[in-house]
Image (cartoon, rainbow, N blue to C red; front, top):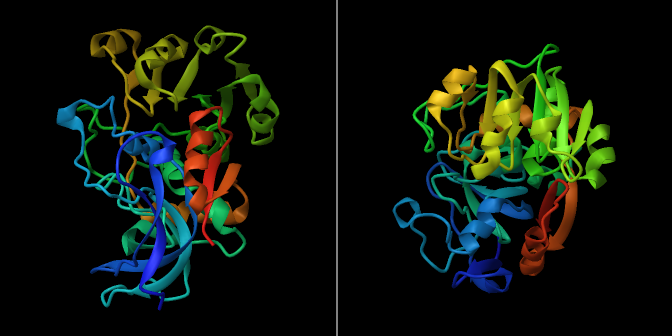
Length: 337
């Protein structure tokens, strides 16, 4: 068993990267249905910095409650240290990875040397994949999977009444991915190619070689031309940037096409109906079974998470500073000694 205390990154106040503090705290104990993981690597995701900032752009009525101090982080790869009595799928010594408790808890306590996790949120890490690459996969990989391949849950979308139904992808399907070099985008590109689709990748010029190596059939440099003007007759747009400007991609779609904004914006149902297109989104959720499917693709080399940069856990503030500079290629990962 581990020592009674561990190093963890905690928020005692909201603000910039400098508020991430290295603390000595008690090692948590697994509750019913949980395992204790010795953390080897932690993947960074946008909710990490949204919470760090106090989610200032979220209306008060929609802002989930947080109690400070809190340990951020949801994406983890590590080794099972201990299990609750009712856990039978894992044992001490198993190498696992997962997206922890999302979105029930927007932060799962992963920025630490140890973390507890629901066993149902975890999958076994492939032996041939290191912890850094495994930690880069969960939230971004599950987002791409649940938008493009299989939703895998019955929870209603927090953004709209319409239920999200992933479009069947195949050799006759053209998919445009906006923000293709980012965490969700570069994994979505690989999943779409796995299904046989033709993929148009949208990113800035320096990412072209990287995205073509991942399988992009066409590349649009958004710094030189507007993708909504350069592309036409698209079956599906996955807009990983999303937000208020996502609506511009409606003009790229053929009738019967779909737009999936990862960050939902304002849309007019009447306009969508007139154009003959659908616009749906969803909220990524923890799902160990889907992660196991992704693990098989990871093990086979079909999906390869790209690592933008790594930082020691104790340099979490520097990792957040890197994230704030943007133009991330793949994922930022914290390593835990």
